[in-house]
Length: 385
Ligand code: PMP
Image 1 (cartoon, helix red, strand yellow):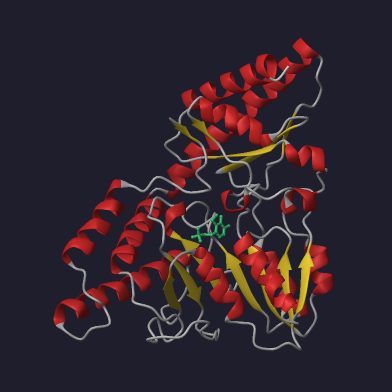
Image 2 (cartoon, rainbow, N blue to C red):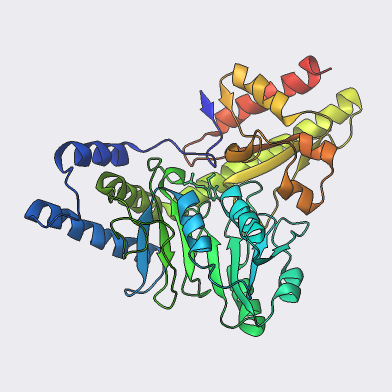
């Protein structure tokens, strides 16, 4: 099996799985209880909050709220901050559905919600952001790394625009595809809220977190036992949290080496795709069949590619039959028609139809890419004639 859909989810590492099973089997206590074994679990969880604050570059007085994943973190960040209909809330068109659909819901509820488009390189359009920001803008949400194209937004630049136009604005970052993969600090760009998820970094599904800076107030969006600083009710998930902690430690210990490995794999894939494109021209006189969407502004973990005149889904299905797994855009939204992100960058409907996403794990190999290219070539030259 060749797995190249690591932006959808990653294979959990052995250590994180072991911790998850061990805690569930042996230390299954409710950390809100007052007896010693529960208290010790609760203390450990509090230390892990500090671990995550440190990894994000925050300060000791900031908070980490554990959630069921980044979808919940994003919902909590957005609806927990939406308290005033007179104020403006700004989102980018490039956001993951777990942010974008919250924004649409806020709009439905009568809030002043504005969307900023994307530039050709996939980053948010900074001029548009500056234009839309007013002194009444109270919330801006932008992702660190696009799950579709890998485009990295310049968060420091966004904060500078906010300082100039909307000084009291809360800045929320969906850092799911960047956390543990590219260098990033909440401190340098004065990020107020930041969403992360375990299953994108070798952890298990169903656990995530929302970082909340000490200067930021958010309200609870669910009701119950007032766990997690009264912001997120529900029995705390110790096995998930301890296993997430391990996954984070492993990726951060290896961040630079992983980055170099993935960059080399991505450069190799890009080179092979250019060669394949030239070959298609020579053999079949087809020009510009393969368009590489990802560029220098992108994280090497994600490569978005358009096979012009083909259906991305058909290519994915063909590769599936060869035990090669790639993505067609975001897995959470792959059944929808069209692609809001590629559309916002400026690709037409036909091009969008031919889009696929290849996303790496540092353990992928060049041999796997060779096999992928071989199958793509076979498909484009022999099968799809
Ligand atoms: N944001 C981004 C950028 C993502 O890629 C994803 C996962 N596809 C999410 C949010 C949702 O994360 P989770 O699966 O933890 O709910």
